[in-house]
Structures are given as C-alpha cells and as structure tokens.
Length: 336
Image 1 (cartoon, rainbow, N blue to C red):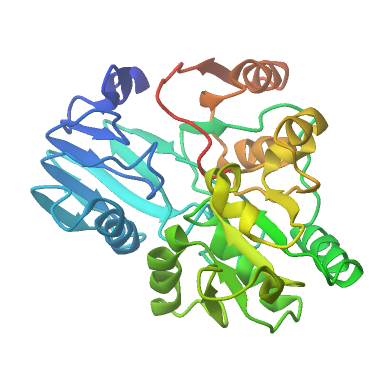
Image 2 (tube, one colour):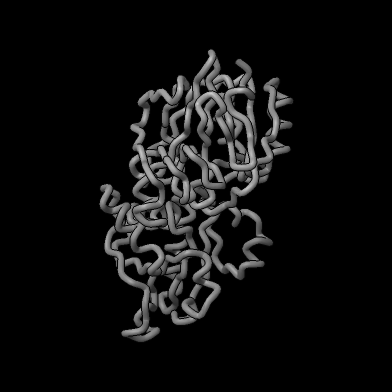
C-alpha cells in the first residue's frame, strides 16, 4: 500500500479511506480522531470522536457535554482496530492530553504528530518518538530563526521585572489551554508562592488541570470590582491574549504588558502588540527540535503541515529524506 492511499488531505481534513476516519478534521465528520484540545484541531459537531480521556474532558469543558454523539477514550500505547486499520495514541508533549496518532495498514505506518514540543513541561507527558515510515510534522516554527530559549530563563526575567517594579502589576497574555497553566507551574517551580490572579476565561481549564494532579498553587480571580487598583500592585495576572486589548486590562495599576509565545522571538510582533516584556515560551517545537525529531522517527518520508512548510521540506531534501507540504488549511497558532 502507498502511504497516500492510507492517509491523504481532503477539504474536511486528513482522511484515512480504509479506516473511514479523519484526523483533526475542520468540518463535522462521521468519525474523528483528535490529537489535542485546541480549537483549531478539536471541533464540535462530529458524530463520533476518539481521543485521550483528557482531551475528551477538555472538549466537554469547551463545547459542552454533548459536543459529539458518541466518544471513545483512547489509552496511550493501546492498539485499536478501526475497520482493519490499527491506530494508537502516543504522548505529544504539547498540552495536557495531547497525542500523536499512529496509523498502520498494509505494511505502512504513518504517524500524525498533531502539535508537539520536546522540552520538559510539568503540565503534560513528554513527547515520545515513534518509529514510522512517514512522519507528518507540524511546522509552526519551521524556520532556522526560531530557537526557543529555556523557559526557566524567561520566567526568571518575569520575576526579575516583578521585583524591580513592585508598584506595577504584570499582565501575562497566555493561551487559555496549556500555555497559561504551564506559565503558572513554571512560576511555582521558580519559587513564586504568592497568589496568581487569573482571568475568568482560565478558571475551568485551570481547575481541570489541578483535578488531574497538576499543582498550580493559589489562584485568585483577577477582578477589581470589589477592590481598588492598588490591590494588584506587584501582582502577576494571567489571562488570554484577547483580554489585554479591552477595558479589563486597564483596571490594573500601571500594568507591564507581557506575552508568552514563541512569536515573541520576532521583535516586530511584540512591538505591534504593544508588549513591554516579551516572553519566548512556546508549546511548539523550534527548528532544532523539529529536525531532530524527524531524524529520531527514522521516517523515509516526511509530510509537513500547518506552518512554515517550505523550509522544513527543503531541509529534508538536503538530508536525503523525501518530503512534501500537505497544505492543510484551518489550523492556527492558538497554542503557540
């Protein structure tokens, strides 16, 4: 069997004809296998959804309990037969519950990575390299310019600023699923034991992380309705990036605008967003991690999707690995 007969792009998403299922479809389908809970990969409206238990829980929190007609929780490493196609889920290291999906049939194994990172993250299981014939890799940061610094150093910069400006609040923009909880945990691991104030959009997901044994410490609502601006002097406030563009952000005392994202490597992006303290913290692999992972999989062919496809395809070709872009559409950078 040719790899393209086992998986290939369709308008709905990546489709497996012999198994009759899609991986991370962007439109409602009969059967969907979902890599993780970010909204560009996990959508409601499918008849049947298979994902890890954590991803199913996260989808229920985001879309309601009836986000699909039926669901099936996949255990990591367990081989499941779907119409004669063997599939298995393996840790992706992206966010809580994230998984790569291995698809095997006719002597061919393809691994769809979803989104992934390789650095240690106390809020999710580490990435597990899976040997395969074809590796489908994301390329969000698929350019050599993207080399992420240690996240501990970025959090140390944040805490240094908090110490230097005790009269100001620090507002940290971080995506609601994964990045926000990772930043909170990094702060705790760095010894920050004061309350962390969070936007209401983060409450349910943060509570879920804590219910899964991920300690985030004392989290308090970031509201000044019942107090004064001065109550947040020296405080760290975490919220979704969109919240810092509205009146909510102006309630805090002379706030230092921060944004935790791999895109903060690009100074112009930080300037355009009015970010005073850019924090280069990403839930996606950087250039070196992408190329190292490709080598580790032992794949003879690489398909590159949702990101900077051309540079990674060229790198593969130079290194004797067949590669092509998939040109999948509908995937953004919610978890960058």
